[in-house]
Image 1 (cartoon, rainbow, N blue to C red):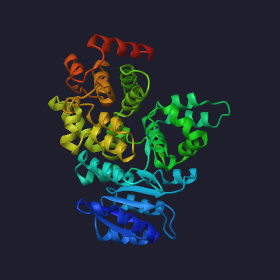
Image 2: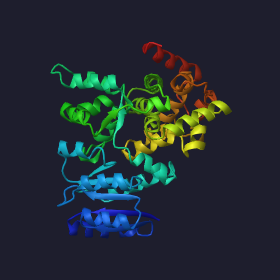
Image 3: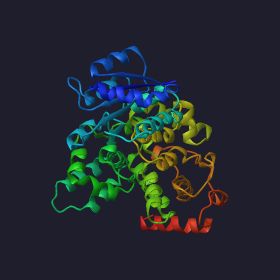
Image 4: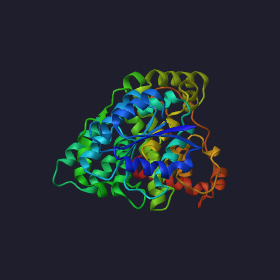
Length: 401
């Protein structure tokens, strides 16, 4: 049974939650405390899968509590509740909260959020791996992109399009911006996966505060030990993203496919920083046994970069279509085919771009078995294999390949 800890200094709010959630008592072991201090005492006494806390509390507030949880119990999923959305508060929470949820909420919304978070355990079944991801407060941004973005944000002549184009060139910054804009603090009527729409909605002030926060982004430091060529990796995801987007009609589907392409290898941002020896060992095994790298990662680490990246994006509240595409882009055939979606677009682009990870890891790696025309038919694509080739080739040409 999963354990949930609820923290709020207002006893009537806690009692309301207790009454509202009592029907879930057969699925969740729920505990309710009225302060950050008591929450820490409960955490020292018992393991919790999820911590849900109010933000504004006397003494230890929600941000301070979640910072402690991230340090001492990093495998716990961290959700903050708040009826306020001050920009400074949101940025302060960015390194510690996985999800932000607005108060008051409609019946069923909080329950669904917690349920979706707990379902992510299916991606990473080892608590130790969940702790690795849970410890992450910031992701490394590419130095040149980060510097250019700082320059653009300090200019009075910049534009939403220019900022968005630059953000789309860095998976870490793009993922964090999408996490922020899709948080319940902003009470959007629908999920946003288009980066330009996200920048326009947040505004330059929010982007500037996010980008300039040393707590949110760090310098890329793991590539030397893990021997990951970050420039080659970023170029790879850009090409895959362009190819995936070319396979969908303009609109939400194309935005989802593009974002899935940009973020499909974000697990390597995590592994290169947190599991450098294990990642390098996976590369050596994949090379020696001539198996795809994601299979070697599963043997050595317990999960592939795809699953680890999808788990992080799920914690951050990105749309399920993107999470699914990231999680299964190496093994799309195991997902029951229903329609041509972001996963299918990503899988086809991954095959047709014809780029493997050899240059990224400086090793002769074995590529995945390609998808083909039969896969296109199974997912009911609205075009044939020749048209898929034509679209992806056109996208590569427009990107200088």
